[in-house]
Image (spheres, rainbow over the protein chains, first blue to last red):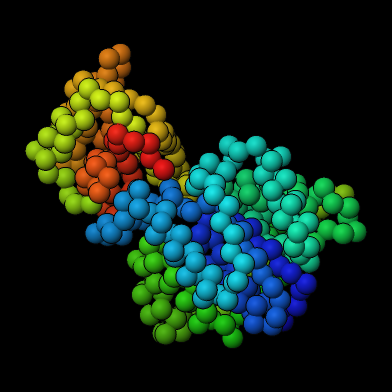
Length: 224
Length: 115
Ligand SMILES: [Zn+2]
């Protein structure tokens, strides 16, 4: 059961970060009337998949991925997609305080009851880590009593060992088609394995179905 | 992009000689290499829109190829290059794609800054 929220703010650095672990949750929230804003920091311009044989170049990839991100947002029903204009793989080199200011402004504007981002320390890619850190920093500035909930995505090899099992598990099987459409929208990055994945899903491979139908989050644990 | 034709790329490198240019040079194993294999040592570099001017530009090897640029007081080179394109903006885009088609190196020259 996914609770309705006042407003949900999703903050990730890369187009497609939302697709695998969060798109079903987003689609469900929107279907149930919760407004969702998706702030995506970069255009994933450093992505390594250019198609095989290549249909993109280093220089055309950002525009291709921008269109894919817009298509993915449409597949989930997102009306408020914000592309923040950062450069892929450089987020950790930005001024974290200023990045947090940007998120604080967004939180003040939207007043979300839930923020979804990466769990700092457990999300592998330096951009994921830097984004999660700055989001936590911005929310940590608020008084405990008015902080939105923070649901984090984590997938480092040690995440369950250190954080325990995810405390939030969403069954999103009702919107599995929308989730598939979101993944498909990120063609340049997913085309290579989508067919294989859909075949496995059709053959009812338990691991594939589990990944398609369940999305898992850790509630951020504040120290104060 | 198309597979590198050595002669064509050599001619293009010659056309860019002794001009003020912008370079994009990047090598990468992807940010997840060590996540997938803890024994893998990940290293890479990225530079975009550095100004450069070279007097000799050479492509070498039999594929994957190497490209070296000799400057007034230094060198730039890249290896593992497999594909190229002279795009509609007149930029020389070269890339090395691994066996799965993923980018491992990008080496690009332009007369105007990359966006
Ligand atoms: Zn990512």
